[in-house]
Length: 167
Image (cartoon, rainbow, N blue to C red; front, side, top):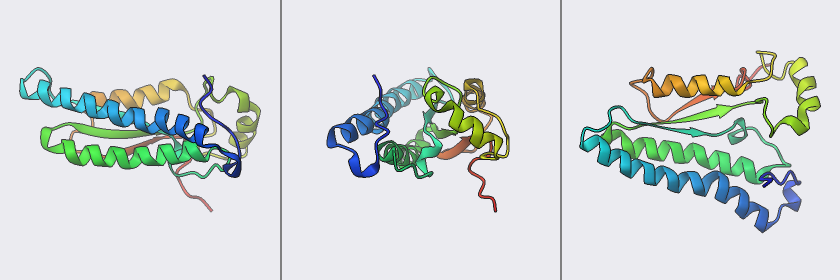
């Protein structure tokens, strides 16, 4: 199922909005709620230690893309969702993080490969290469292995430096 509408902000439909927001925000919100409750139960029973919740978002959480407005809104909402759960779950020792991948080589980006090849070559990101799924996986592993024990609610950019504002 194709999830992105890739239609102009002024042409988006209520149906596409609902589909994108349900998939990219409502689903993760209620899944996180369910998982958090179970983590609290398991942690209080000493079955697990140092549990983490990791939300995979996107640079679309802050980068405007008027042909994917619904997706951008969903990802921006995930940022607040992460902060809210981080705040609520800190008392239970559950860390909550948001990973923001940038341009990652995947089936989703294949249709726009030529565009991003050109933009990357022109300096879209300081690290001038496509991101790889393994780059995201390594960030997940760092969090899961408790390499950030005094952190929660953090955004980890896995974007080749796209988030750096440059003149």
